[in-house]
Amino acid sequence: MNKVDVAKSSWNVLREIFEESVPFHKSLGIKVINLEMGEPKLSVDMQDKFVGNFVRGNLHGGVISCLLDVIGGIVAFVDVVNRRDITTSDAKIEQFSKMGTIDIRVDYLRPGFGSKFIASGFVLRTGNKVAVTRMELHNDDNLLIAVGTGAYVVG
Image (cartoon, rainbow, N blue to C red; front, side):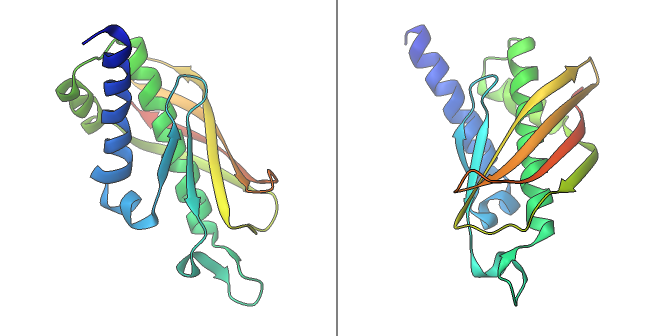
């Protein structure tokens, strides 16, 4: 297996962790779009069960904060995996087992209207124990719905 195949395989392991291995993520239908450093993204399609205001039909604030939290965790995880040069599937799963959300702040900027939502983020700082990330949620018209900042234990 060459270096490109190893990298591709590595991303598939991470995608599987975030899409299939976490039952809550799977129940939301989260799809990882990209895991490359600096560009991690996930998406979720609007579903009837995600409606927060039944009169307006917009996305529930809890789903918004969840998507921001998940992308924040992905961003932190990818950064730690790259920084620590974690290459094996077992080592990635071990690193994942050490991670968790410490704190998250969400600013809701406008109602979540749309048929698809895309979350992205980037690392503000990663230390030995904690990573801090910045996250955004856009709809399918590229309107910014919400932003967040999260702190994650990484070690």
